Amino acid sequence: MTPAPADVLISPSILSADFAALGAAVRDVDAAGADMIHVDVMDGHYVPNITIGPAVVAALRPHSDKPFDVHLMIAPVDPYIEAFADAGADILSIHPDASPHTHRSLQSIRSKGLKPGIVLNPGTPASVLEPLIELTDMILVMSVNPGFGGQSFIESQLRKIERIRAMIDETGRDIILEVDGGVNPDTAPRCIAAGATALVAGSAVFKGAGSLAENIRALRPASPARSAA
Ligand code: DX5
Ligand code: ZN
Image 1 (tube, rainbow, N blue to C red):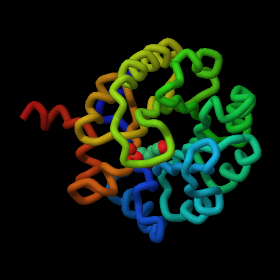
Image 2 (image 1 turned 60 degrees about the horizontal axis):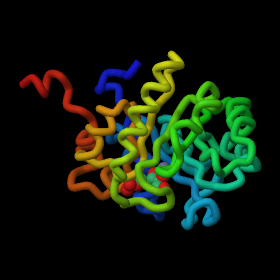
Image 3 (image 1 turned 90 degrees about the horizontal axis):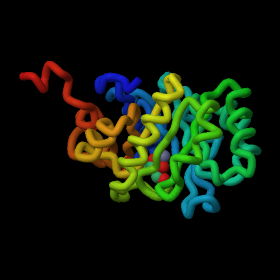
């Protein structure tokens, strides 16, 4: 079932925060109303950028009780699953083309007590999910090509979100459908209308026009009371 719009989870990406003050950034977005903390892990191999590793995730863990939504853009993934579990990740999402044995990688993530997620690049079809969806607690649709913040939303991904919404509903399971890349107050409502239940936002939260709380609120749908007013 698609949750009510008020249930949409906002997961600010700390990729757009000040890297010299990441602990404060995590505390600040937590206090500003974030539902999860999105951590972009890049290896300079699977994607053309290098960001942070398990030691930084572990260092950030005491700064928030919110779930850490850790997005692995690394290949291979298997040698690092335990390190991210130990570091305090709650959701660990992997790109299927980054692991030669995606099914086993998802099982391995679950066996460590984490929620496994699958990430689809803009060029990856929804059909990849068919043999994997039962193993996942999150499906993350990339609405930009992974590697950098601040890119423009790729419109064609809305159709894929709709298709995946239907696939999730068919399972009858409560799988989070998250969208990542170019999410802002214009694109957020369109993602939600297509069936998304979680939104990642880096630039829109950390570099938006208002305070962190205002920027997060601007991504949420208007409450029924407000829209009726
Ligand atoms: C891109 C990352 C995103 C990125 C989104 O590879 O996965 O999480 O931080 O940044 P914005 O919201 O600026 O598009
Ligand atoms: Zn991400």
